[in-house]
Length: 455
Image (cartoon, rainbow, N blue to C red; front, side, top):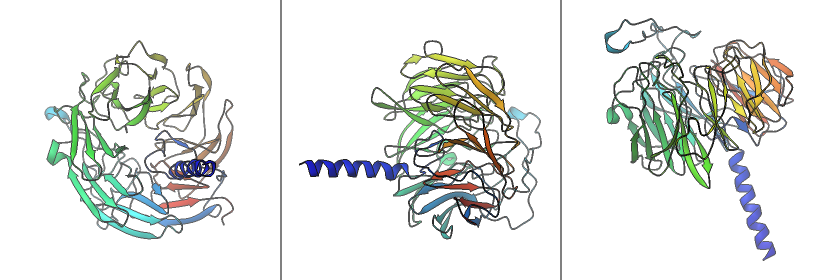
């Protein structure tokens, strides 16, 4: 009996470790920007040092690598073969004047095919690629491949910026596909859909928080992961106006009293939902205190150790205590950040004790996660404009800027810049993935596998 008990404990431990050693979705196995299995990671690298392999990609993308076992999964446009079209103008609602879209440093959107690509983790060699959508354009910083894939090790789910949802097995066979605009109506975000899907207990959760280009309500949608069958769809109301209902955030999960809740931020509110029905359980306001009409949200909510951290369009950044019901705007507000250092685009990260924010210029601020008291910052890293989110791994913060420079900063209460590493200098939006002793960093042209002692 002792042997059998020990065997089952070992099996449970090894299964949990195997799950942690993968990178199954955006921002890691916990969806919170921490890398629990990553150790002995490189602190320095260059084009000639600590690169295990690199592989050229068809086009740039804000999508992050997803990793399971010996497979790397990428959302990507095809290679651009014709002259790059002019970026699409930004449409104004209700007949207003259109404004030209900024190019953000890229030369074109990539090709017109939207692909799911599978690479070998060992060599970077391509195993297969599958087209699951068509139609690609630049929308501000994005093209139509921004959402990151998600996997459970058996199936892979991917979403395009056009709202096409597709499911594949690990051999690259398509299992099902759903066209969200055709089924549920036009996507009404101004700068292209960028939210990654959430996989929770076999359900694929899709958030659609929009309003700038539509009068239709925002909503949450749950699909059966195996069949694609809709399980529920619930409206997610907001009194925000014009661009403020738009959100490019990704939902996350927390557990309260043994029950899971879906956490969604955007449209001037953060809300918690029952995974079985989509029903709203609680709602926190105060994210748009001036009732601004252009307060769209990009950085996603962060859940850690009974706290819910909610970025906005820089400030305020709010922290709520978990466990509330109904209106928690005042009852569960733990602290509010209203000064320099909060992000617009990069999603923060926390170890439970410290809460780290990276602003859009690559400066890092550290505060007490429970009280919001400043510990240090903003401290400049020198990497410049930043859209990728920081990752906390192996006792360090890794933050990658838009020119493919990565700052490595010591975690803890004192700011110490360990290194600043340069790669190919191309347009980089993607947040890296961290598995075991390797970093998978996607630039505008290559996917790099970084590890120590590699020439």
